[in-house]
Length: 326
Image 1 (cartoon, rainbow, N blue to C red):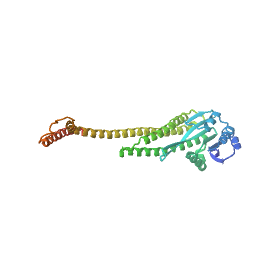
Image 2 (image 1 turned 135 degrees about the vertical axis):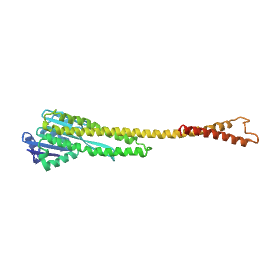
Image 3 (image 1 turned 45 degrees about the vertical axis):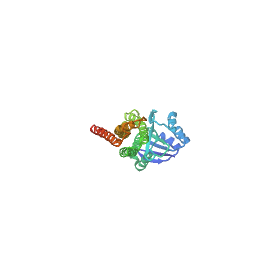
Image 4 (image 1 turned 90 degrees about the horizontal axis):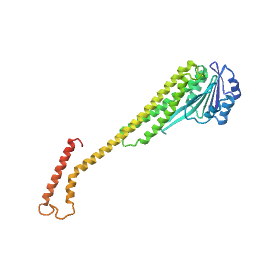
């Protein structure tokens, strides 16, 4: 689906015009265009990007093929941006990104994406309701789309934060549960977010520094605000990464403590049983004339042996408690 909006002096004059009219409007300095191509076929994209706007073949190729890394390219009369919208599904442990390509010129903005985007829908609604506020020029309209796109990072971050908090509670309440798989899955998603945010932040920083003449100087503070927003998102992603690392370390430490307790109990039991094992093993030797196995007083002799081993065990127990080893 390809939608088009025609503005003049900030007012919405027409919508969904044909390609022939779009070509004519491109040469009218008093007209601004916004063309949004959502889930368009490859043929429709090529016709729009090559035949109508005559964009550079490399930019068209990047627009048609998926580009994982956000970037901005300068083609003198326009700039080409690759950005990514995000969505996080906690139930599926899945961090999804949707590519949004933008061609920003002096009197036109072309946006291309494969699936519906909330940021585009939000700005479209604002354009139809109050066009002068957002659509006075393509660079301003681009800012509003990017601002709406970054606002959608908030719900994804909140969802991820809740899942990390639940994981921390699980570590403390039931250390026996194996959380390694969950932690590694979340760390993968956080790493994915950082891979998107970092180059996107650099892209916005270049625009905010005034590297591109297409973006007018009085709008640069607005793009710096976008940079600050992305910096906060990046800081949150770094914080989530550290939190997951700490949660995993706490989990491993608790498990190690549990193992140490088991080893401690087994060691104490082995130590306490040692005197009896020594004495009983002595009487278990396969030799003749073992002491105290013949004669009438053998019962008293065994009682004495048991008393001695019990006394030794008691002494060992006292020593272990005195040393606070048990």
